[in-house]
Length: 119
Image (cartoon, rainbow, N blue to C red; front, side, top):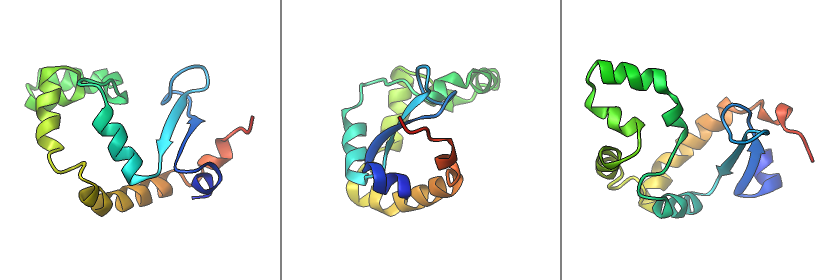
């Protein structure tokens, strides 16, 4: 919460391994409406961190899981994602589930401020 108060609803920070570049830059969004706009404007097959989970993808392919398409880019990803997000991005729906996600993220990252370097 302190980071959000200090930096606003949208900011970046370094999380090596998870982020991109030398500092591991990740972008954080703390506002439901801003997040909905970002997701609505994404490309038809955006990239994401899940694509780096190649061991899981290989295992899912070996087991013939139909949902493996969600772990990749392309038409199958878009088909599954479109079905799943039908009501997911509506602001009213997001207001229902995002507080729980934010609470869990806050709890999980409560020590993150110890690793933030001020420039």
